[in-house]
Length: 259
Length: 298
Image 1 (cartoon, rainbow over the protein chains, first blue to last red):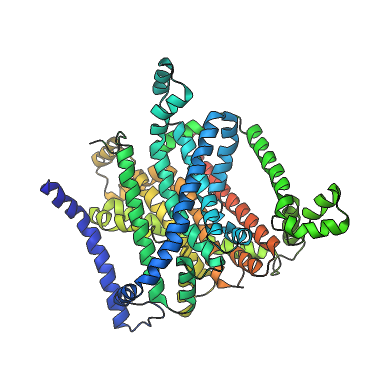
Image 2: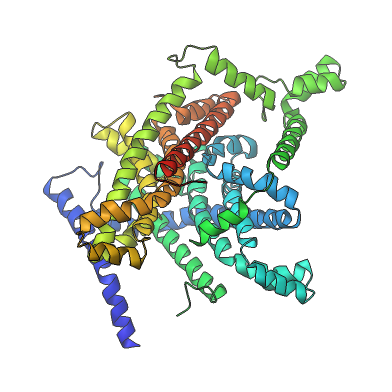
């Protein structure tokens, strides 16, 4: 147990050292060359500002991540999954929607943000709408591929058991699709964050991470902007890690997790 | 590999033309029908003034100057007017804005691909680089770079970098990630037998790289390139949002949004989508040509 812990630490050590080195070099360069804090604040100043403005950061965190990103991410992914199930039931729909979904996934969909703000006004609704639109297609494409991922042999076995479509779905095909679904959930977690923050550039709200980043950049409060970035990066990483852990529990049978 | 094999299952020979056409037609009809209630806030008084009736409802709702949801034919007309009826170097031309966005997309794409490939080659050849860089490369993508685009543009503008380069840097940052991940997979993909063969030839690391690893990574490279060009375009468009009136599809969206010119926002969105489709299509063509040159036969 302790041996595996130390070997894990050994694995992580170069990465930790690299990260620390970047911070040290950053701080040293800013101090040595007297770079104006209007251009690049040193990490120490960012940390000080972070501690100083925790209430603001917490408010923005609540507005953007809890009120927009989470519901948008969940709704968009769920909608994509439901339509993928529908496509699975109706092959004609799948043959038509899948190429369209693949096509839509490469489009700069975040550009829909100004239109959604015009439609849904100033609340949190346009942000959620943008996220739903951005997260729908990756889930649709991945879940559709995943539902086709179970082997022929397994499906034949289900048929020989006389399993109905629903039974085969729950017992075989949905579990087999899980790696794909989690892949989409991971992609969507990044997209949702981007969608929420970009939508806030257009809105007229006076709270939220996107608003703070934009006004902070204009008002030269870059230490606050970097604090928001830290919050976004840390939350994003933690959420991602949570997804990876959940995936491990759900898809423990997958070859990549078997030891 | 799992992704590749499932992709094959999905794209095996099925007729796609009829279902796609049916669904596109259905979407078009839904769009037209939706446009009437969506626009009714603006259209209703004018319909009443014109005396009502089905013809007036259709004619007025679907031909508003600043609609809430423009009808498809309005978009086509707007695209036609701003692409073919205006000189391409004029600010009113959509081509002018497309070109600005495209040039920064392509510059960022080239820079990002070079960075991505160099990082991947380093990671494959050095265990230390792999351990030190890989977690940070993955963590780098948790920073929503698109979201901090305003800051990057402002900061780079303050040190005298304006115009093309700041936007390209955002595209580059988005681009390099899929390329690095794909290329690391690709460079690692030759199997042990082939690597052993190279060793029996007494090939050194650079010979193995050029003669075995790089050729083997080509399919992975093209898959990554398709993702990369799409995100590069998104990056360029979002990078243009805070730059104001300097041009580009993003700034056309922002200006259109600020002045209530819905048609400009919509046409910029459609133009961006066409551009994305075109770029991905070009990479797919290049992939086919390269595969053919490398001896792949269907």
